[in-house]
Image 1 (cartoon, rainbow, N blue to C red):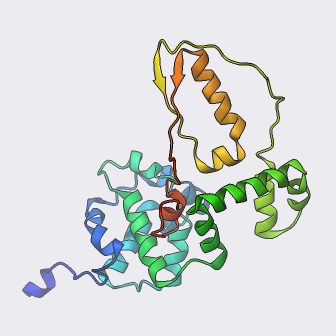
Image 2 (tube, rainbow, N blue to C red; image 1 turned 90 degrees about the vertical axis):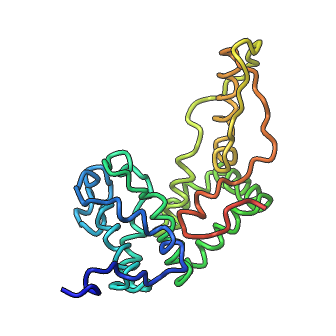
Image 3 (cartoon, rainbow, N blue to C red; image 1 turned 90 degrees about the horizontal axis):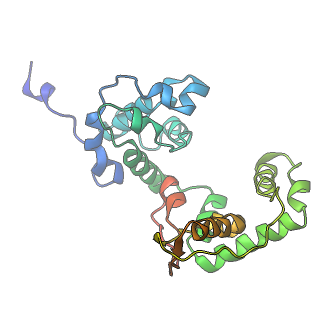
Amino acid sequence: MSTKSLSTPQCAIPDTPLGRASEGLDACVHCGFCLQACPTYITLEDENDSPRGRLVLMRAVVEGSLHVDDPDVRAHIDRCLGCRACETACPSGVPYGQLLEATRATLTARQPNAPIARLILFVFAHAPLLRLAMLGGRVTRALRLSALLARLPGRLGFAMAMLESTRRTMPAVAYEPAGDGARGEAALLTGCVMEGLFTETNRATERTLTMNGYRMQPVAGQLCCGALHAHAGSSARRCA
C-alpha cells in the first residue's frame, strides 16, 4: 500500500468557516446516541437528517466528495433546527453547534439566502428598524388582523398564526411590587422579540424578582444577540 493512500484527505474548502472548523468532525465516532435526541431524525427517519448524518455530509464537503453547491447538502443542513440536543447526548463531545454554524456560513457564502430572509436579518441587525417592525407586529395583533391573515395559505398565514399565538390570554394585574433588595441585585436580558412582542412578560419577571427581594439593575445598550444571523449563515451579528 502506498504512502499516498494512507495520507489524510486534503481539505477541499480550506479558506471557509467549515474548513477552519473541520477538526471538530474528528470527534464523531458514529455511535448513534444522537439519533433519538434529534427531532428531525425522529420525525423524518432519514439518516441524512440526523446529527451524525449531517456530520458525514460536512466531512464529504470538506474532503471534496460532495460539492459545496450540492442542493441535497443544503436541504439536509437547512432542516436542522439547531436545538443542539445532540450535544448533551454525545459521549464524544462533538461541537455540533459550532460545526453547523460554520457549515451554514460556508454554504451561504456560495448561495445567498432568499431575499425575504436577507431582509429579515437586515431588520434584526438594525435596532431602529427592529423597533419599528415590532411596533407593526403589536398593532397588527391589537387590531386582530393577525387572526384574519392567519387563514391565508403559505408562509404569510403561518407567520400571522405565530403572531396571533402571542396574544395575551390573561387580564393584566396593576400593582406595584415592594422589595428592599436584601437578596441582591438582578438584571434582565430583555431580548429583541421578547421585549417587542412579550413586553408584559418581561415586566412580570421584573416584578417577581422585586417581590422576592432583588433590586433590578437596568442594562443599557442591549443589542441583538445574533442568533438568527448565526443560524442563517450570515456574518452580520450585531445591531447597529
